[in-house]
Length: 262
Image (tube, rainbow, N blue to C red; front, side, top):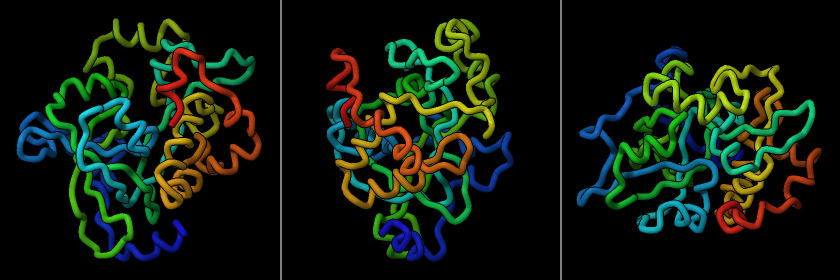
């Protein structure tokens, strides 16, 4: 079904960062004046992982409005970078020979698209959102109707895309923050993990995302399983879960059960 819907997007408008060089792939960084917003001070946000279910999104943004599913064209999801918050919350497994600490990002991929959740967040401060998503760049990104009817985007929202380099993280937040979030855990790079690096998704977070996608409905669920990849860009999450059924049966720590349950 997801493949059929993809074929119906005849001439999609790709995000600005899709056509840029790797260094410039951030696209148009939004200042306070440029952020996609509605009248009354709502900020439009695009979620592609754990925010796919309205329940999960409301656990982060209780006052959100206008929750809807949509499609972003010209990209795919990849579990390709570690998230400092996973170490801080104690959900990175201590598995010898494996580094299961990866979070999720999107990257340009011609001919692909992903189902996303779009929502308006009243009173959300842009700087606070940037701090929450500290390892990303917030980029104004067009989104299309979920059913793929029509070529033009139906709106624009802020989406998290990878920083061009680790140095950008240090420039934004300082070396002390890098040390707290990553260095003290032995992590030497955020965005320097190549296809052969072997970094794997954080199991608790992956389960959370899969459950959120499932709750969002069959189209979003299929999109997540079939258009989300390991760092090798070959193995889909559907394929990975077949080899790791334990991920979906293992429960989060009791203190995080509500937060990491889709």
